[in-house]
Length: 294
Image (cartoon, rainbow, N blue to C red; front, side):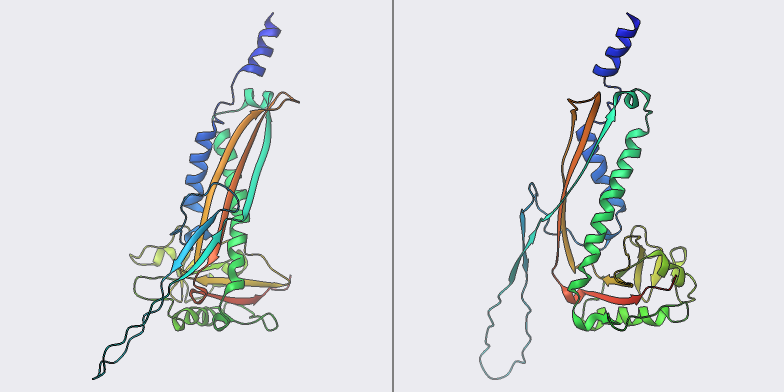
């Protein structure tokens, strides 16, 4: 009888009750919003409500206003034609795993947070890589180096190259009062930057507020580090810009838990939808950097 009672407790009990879909969804959304590197560098102005892959977010960009000199002639009025573009939610990612009943019984109170962090990390990796790929939309005038002649960085030259990168943004009028640019580097480039005397570490940035997770500032740009800035054919594409450049929309669409009919396990799965649009290419700049020899 004791054995039967024990079996009933494992199969029908809910020792893993921390996996309540509503709690998962809320907590996972919160930690993604707070800590994801690239989400510090985009805007969410047109997010709206996203329910399905293929949903579109309509983006209206205001037209430029021209200035004329007042003379004796009558004032002429130009007709403004704002541009419209669609942000398509075309990225669809999911996670799915099972937890057997023995693991449920043995789980401690911290297991939910551990799984949340692992889910967050997995989402961030694909999301950051996707947003960093927006380097392909950078205006030609805002590129330092090239695929055929990438920049070689070292502690002696890194500052001057980042000045060129920042200058691209200034020359394209992307930087104005109250708009602070950012730049994304990887740990390899960070190792050079930390040896540069011109780099201002986060602990020395006076009273100004840095973006979440920024390690400091170089050439007026907040510096963030992402391990998802990986080499492509032996080159890094270091991305810089302002938050006006890329519009991003996402939603953790569903998190579900259900019983596995083929085993003594619970199934947990989640669906994450997102998309991005480079709405102001001139507000982005990139530096093509050669990967150092191993």
